Length: 100
Image 1 (cartoon, rainbow, N blue to C red):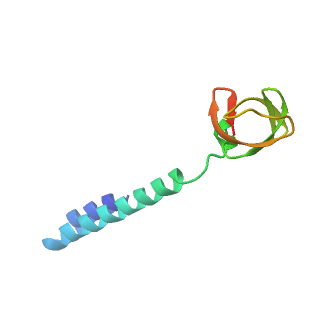
Image 2: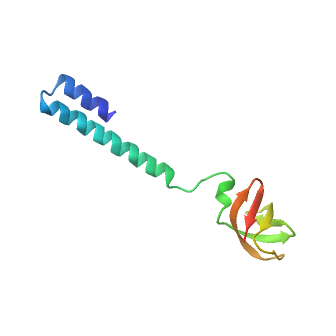
């Protein structure tokens, strides 16, 4: 929107070099706004989905199963798992959690 305003100012209000300054300023504001939105949306943890489980702690309940956030998930360990052990989710492979 700032770029459009800069172009309209250049066409209808300013003359000469000031017209180019208005367009450049509008473009710079537009770029800064787009960059700010991109950073804000890409530097946050996921709020929903199975990706939110990565980094969470889980408790091994049975051979090949862990309990995390009150739910049972099939798990595969990077080392042998013992019942009652607290493990951390490393990655998600389909509906199986890779824990270690």
